[in-house]
Length: 204
Image 1 (cartoon, rainbow, N blue to C red):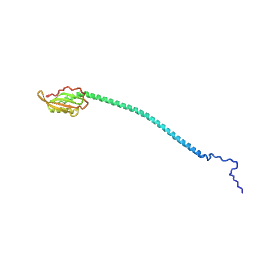
Image 2: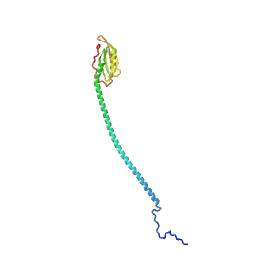
Image 3: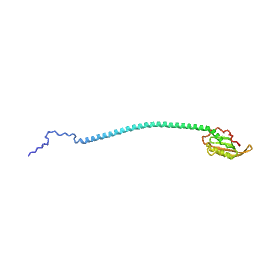
Image 4: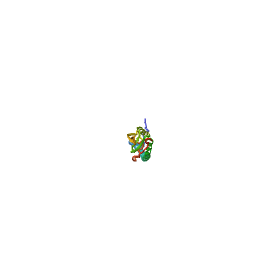
């Protein structure tokens, strides 16, 4: 019995074509992986570069705003300083105005506080205190006078009785006294010793 293999190509028949030879497949795969990796790295670097550009733009904008804020702070500080200078000038004007009227007010106050049997001889003023010298018929008159000055609010507490001395004036025994007081408000302008004030004479 004779068998014929029809599957075997006859001599001279063409071989089937192969798209990718086996020997080249590893190289092609390696090259493909290299290209994919390169594209990935390139894409990553492109993304990083874009983020860097955005960050630099944001930093530049922030620096511009910071410069604007610094300029605004300088203007604000200048305005505050100008305001403080104006407030200091206004305060100085108020103090000068108060000090200008202080001697008149002090004399009016002493005139109102003088009791019967007491009169003043001299008022001496310095930058921080006032010394009052006078005569009285009794220690009670001196004490009442000092108390009246003390509760007036014009002087700080206490109004000090520095000295008291008995002496004779026109054949009458009187008490010569010296009081010391410190103004509670702005210092009274010093213009030398105040003129003698005579009030509340004995028998008045």
